[in-house]
Each structure stands twice: as structure tokens, then as C-alpha cells.
Length: 378
Image 1 (cartoon, rainbow, N blue to C red):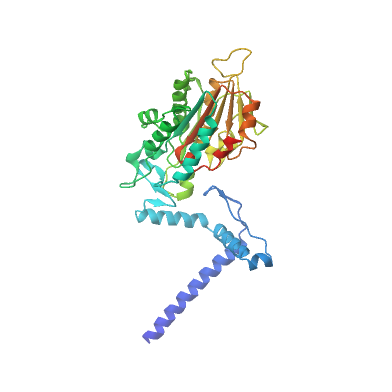
Image 2 (image 1 turned 180 degrees about the horizontal axis):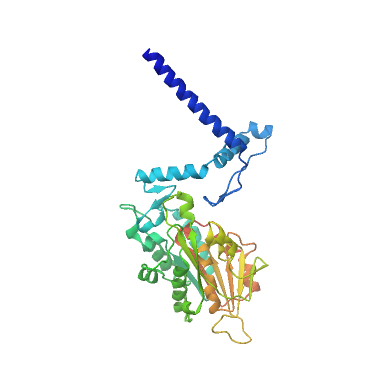
């Protein structure tokens, strides 16, 4: 009798599980696939086209598995449930992102490839030969400015000492800008995002002021500019960790007038792609993201001289996207190059366009890992 009841209970469990699987399978089949996930800020994999060749080499199977993983119903809710369960278990990291104090997130960055950094420093040394007015600014990551907000016991790469070593090595070939003092002195302000790897526009402005000080320029006062704010920004760290308890950031920008903005030869309206403010990756609004050559021209230059055109070239990663527009108050034209998307050789640009100053500005993590700095040679 007892055995019969146990068998009956098992049968009911199997039946309920089968109903659960059946309902979700039908629901999944009837739900149209989505193209983009706002929650994860990425494009989702689509149903692969069947072919016998793909079936035989396993590419179709792998593609279909990726499609199922990206498109199953209630995906966002399952991710949210997983995140809350991990937080309930006091887990302090997920997918390479650690959860710190004051609602801050940080990349888990405990080592790097010294060989790649050595290559990149060699490219900078080669680029510096025969050039005047060349400046290097290496930006520390947020955890260096807020070490007290890291999880207890987490040992990260000492970026400060690494940057000092870089400046010591390259300091005879180019000017360097030490951003640590101004960033640490203003750490009580909102100068790095909580959910993103970038500094805020206020952090970028501090670097701009420091650069102007080094070059003998007068920085524009933000009090003379119109400030705007966009709420609900969830950045790259959130997208990686899916920490649903994260506190969203506020993105600030300034209304900086431009006479013209061209990106890879295409005219744009202003330096901001305001349509991005409707999306999760709001930081992509600055300079329309990471493009090859962006040229900002304006009448903002406080030291403009009739008959002359002053220019600066910035070779950068995405940290400079919110930094570069401030320089229109010190130069007539600001050229911004991202080597990841650069359509031509640097030599051609330098030969066709004279620059008063060249600024190389990278976050340390990007400077050591970037595989495009070799483009400076051509």
C-alpha cells in the first residue's frame, strides 16, 4: 500500500514536470524571437538557417543552442531571479564584476599581459620620434580612486605604480599628465559611474582642467555652460553582472555649441547622439560612440586668432568621448581618432593636417590590452 502511494506520488511529479515542460515548449515556439535585449544591452542570436553541411560540422547545432539560450521565454525574469538568489547567498561577484560598497561595481582585475603592454609602449615610443607637443594621459580605473569600496581582501593590479613606471619610461619623449591628484582630491564628488567602467562627465572635466593647466590654457568654466542630466543609466558593469539590485547612474552632459561635427566624413547634428538616451547604453551618445575620425569645429575657442586655425589630435579610447568636447574652448578644431575604427594610416592624417598638439589618452586597462596601437606606425 505504501509502495503504491509512493509510485502514485512519483507519477504525479513526472506528470506535472511533463506539463511544465510542454507548456513552456509551446509558449517558446509561439513567441516571436526578439532582436535586441534592452536588459542586457546586446543583440540576441537569431534562428540559424538549416543546412546539411551545418548539421554535419556541428555549426548548426551550436547556432541553434545559442538561439534557444537567447530566446527562451521569460529570460529577463529568470536572470533577475538568479541574480537575487546569488545576492541572497551573499555572492560578491558575477561574470568578472565585483560588488563593492556605496553601490559601486568594479572589474575584477588581478593580472594583465605584460607582453602586450610592452608592445604598446614600444609603439608609443616609435610614434613619439620627431614629434613636438605630444602628451600622454593614462586614466586610472575607479577602484584605484575608491579602494575603500572594494570587497575586503580583493587584491587588484596596482595601476598607480604601473602608470608611474610608464611615465618614467616615456617622460623623456613626451609630456605626461598625472591625473591621480585631481581625481583623488575630488573623490567625494560623483566622478565615476557606479554601474559602468567610465568616468562621469564631471570626472572628465577634472582631467580637462588638469590638461589645460599642463599646457598653459585657460579651461572653460562649467558655470558658463548649460548642464543637462539623464536618469536611469545602467552601464557595462551592470550588463555583465546582471545585478538587479544595482542603483542606476545619472548621466550628465553640457550643451556645447558646434559649427560642424563630422564622423568619418559624414556630417552630424551636434556632438551628441541624443537618441541613445532612450536606450540602456546612454554613454554611447557621446561622439556617437567609437568611430574612426571625428572632427569638432566651433567658434568656442577662447584664444582664437584671426587668420589662424589651431588644432589638437586626440588618440583615445572611449573615456575621451565625454572629454574631447571641452577642448573646443581651447582649439578651433578638435580631431578625435579611435584606432579600433580608424579607416586610414596615421601618417596620412598627420601629413595632410597640421596639429598644434597631440594628446594620447587611454584608461590603463585599455592601454595595456589594446591590439590596435600598431596603427600609429602607418
